[in-house]
Every structure is written in C-alpha cells, then in structure tokens.
Length: 98
Image 1 (cartoon, rainbow, N blue to C red):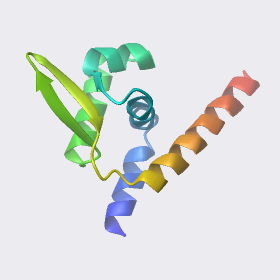
Image 2 (tube, rainbow, N blue to C red):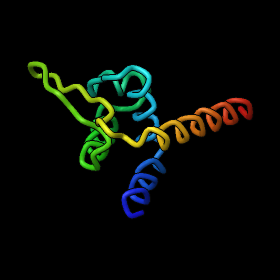
Image 3 (cartoon, rainbow, N blue to C red):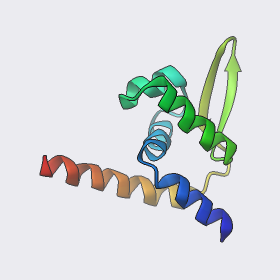
Image 4 (spheres, rainbow, N blue to C red):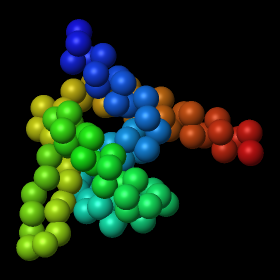
C-alpha cells in the first residue's frame, strides 16, 4: 500500500505524468528529446526523470555521453494504463474548454 501511495504521489505531478506517457509511447528518450517532446526545459525534464528513476519507475542506459531513459521493467502496467487513459481524457477536456 505504501508503494502504491508513493507511485500515485509521483503521478500527481503533471510533468512526471507526461514524461511517463512519452516514454510509454516511444520506449526510450534522452533528456533533450524529452524536453523537446513535452515543450518543457531540459532542467524540468532532467529533474522529472531523476525523480522517476530514484522511485524505480524509470531505468536508464548510457550510450557514449548520452543517457537514455525508459520505463522500468515491472512498472505496474495496469496502473500505467489507467493513469495514461485518465491523463489523455483530461488533456482532451482541457483542449475542449480552451
């Protein structure tokens, strides 16, 4: 229960939720590509990825000087699917209002 609470707390941040959504869509991104895809600063992308990695939700691999991030093995798939569906619907609702 504590792990679930911690995961939900991490997903409550819109930037981290969007980073997880992006990683689910393309499998792997570096900090710069994450920032570009989400229209956020590299600092914001790097911080979100660092927090998610520390929590065990994201893993990384280095290729030369570039670090690539992906969803960690064992990421709670049903939770991910539910959260991503909800995030998508909230985004559509916000777009419809604007």
